[in-house]
Amino acid sequence: MIDFQKYQPHPSLAIYIDSYFVIRTGMYNKKSKEIIGSFLNFSNHPQGTIDMMFSLHGQGIQLTTNQNDGQNLSDIFLMAQQEGKFDIKFMPDSYIFGIVFYSESFSKFLKLPLSEITNGGLLLKDELDKKYLELYDKLKNHSNSNDMVVTVNKFIVGELARFEHTFGKFDKLIRYIRATNGQMSIEQLSSLSNMSTRSLQRKMKEVTGVSPKSYSRTVRFKYAINLIILQQEVDWHDILFECGYYDQAHFIKEFKFHTGYTPSEFIKNGGDTLSFFFSKE
Image 1 (cartoon, rainbow, N blue to C red):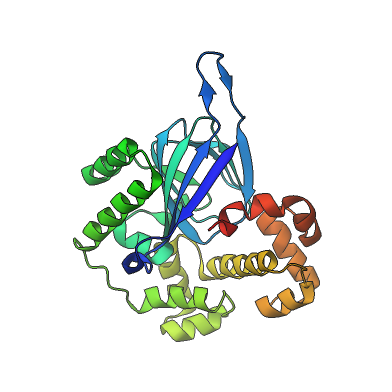
Image 2 (spheres, rainbow, N blue to C red):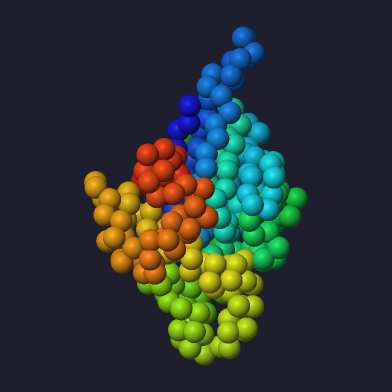
């Protein structure tokens, strides 16, 4: 059993935070020493965001990616940018609160070498300022999710008051990639940013952890998934055209890279699982 709830941040924070979420998994029966439910494994596609998670109860998650085989993450941890299909094993009796940051805003809150932790996660508890540990304790003491959302909203507002958080030209370029659903070429992005391709690559990895091509690829695929979810009867030709894929072969290759499925397999077997976090509102 898994319960997943998604929450929107305060409107004033929507430019920094995509969403919050709360995850609860099956409980552990101390008397019978049995798990009500089981370990829960989910495959997911890259989201193009950076998630900061607070494991309020239980042992957190196990993250498996194309570069990390079974990384255990608990207490306070980060899920960095993912560039391909990844698997999450939720431990029994877990209670997790997550903050989903847009890439360009996360780098304003915490200065971390994002490019070094791409396709993986990072334990944060020992790396954070005292105020984050205090937030962790407050969240642990709340009895309902709505109170957690209010507390985190206040915390983020307080953090924004402490540092320079205006968005520069490069931050706006990243937002433009999302606004155009990842369909701008590297040459177009280089021209818009008034940067050489090499400088663009370096700056993008610094801010998001991934290259502009990789980030655009993720954004475009996420848009394709959104279209699939919204359509009652999937028109693949319409999706190929709308998302700017060259041809069917290219689209199938992208689909398998991001999900491990072909498009038809996704609809038949994996859609509910792979779109679980993306589709929930």
